[in-house]
Length: 224
Image 1 (tube, rainbow, N blue to C red):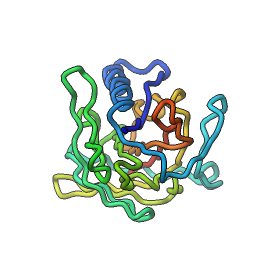
Image 2 (image 1 turned 30 degrees about the vertical axis):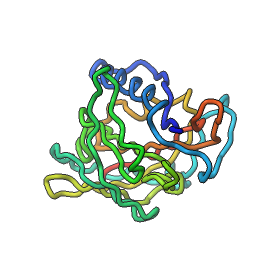
Image 3 (image 1 turned 45 degrees about the vertical axis):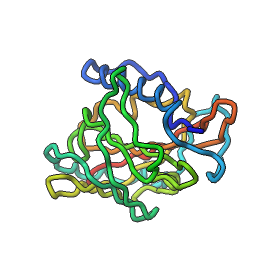
Image 4 (image 1 turned 90 degrees about the horizontal axis):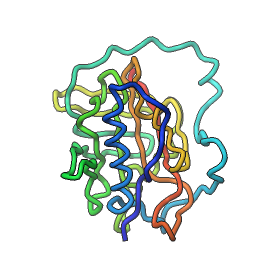
C-alpha cells in the first residue's frame, strides 16, 4: 500500500508570478495521496490537534535575538544533483520532477525511498527564491531520505551539490510540523528576496483510514 506525502491544501493569495506554481503544487499534493510512500509502521508518531497552530519542532532563542546575518550572494541557475545533511547522515541523489500528462507533478519512485526530488520549474538551490526538495519518509520497509528530518535544528547544515560543480550551502532556520489541511503554502512557496531551501516530508500520526500521515514536516533553510 502506498501512502501520501501531502494532501491538497489552500494558501493565502499570492503574487501572480507564483500562481501557476501553486496550481501545480496543489496537483502534486493530490497525486501524492495515491502514489507517494509514507508508510507508518516504523515511523515515530507525534500526534496533535489539527485545530492548533503549526508546531515549531526546533527553534532556539537565538532565532529572535540574534542580529540578522548578511545576505548570501545568489548563485546562477544549475540543476541540483545531491543533497547532504551531515546531522542526520543523509546523502541523497536528487531527481528532477517535471509534469505528468494530467498536469500534476511527477514524484520520486516509491521503490527508491532514498531518492529525493526537486521541482525543476522552480528555483534551483542557490538561486534567489525558495527551492523545494521533497522525499519519502519511508517506503517498502526502507527508511526514506528524509526519515529523520524532524531531528534537524537551527544552525544545522544542508549542502546541495549542483551540476556545475558548485555546492549551495544552507543553514536550517527552523523546522515545523503542520497539519496537511493547514499547509503553509505562502511560507513554503512564496517569493523571497534571498536564496532559500525547503525540505518536506511526512510526519505526525498515521491515519490508517486515509492511508496517510496527518502532518507534514517542513525544514526551512537559508543560503550562507
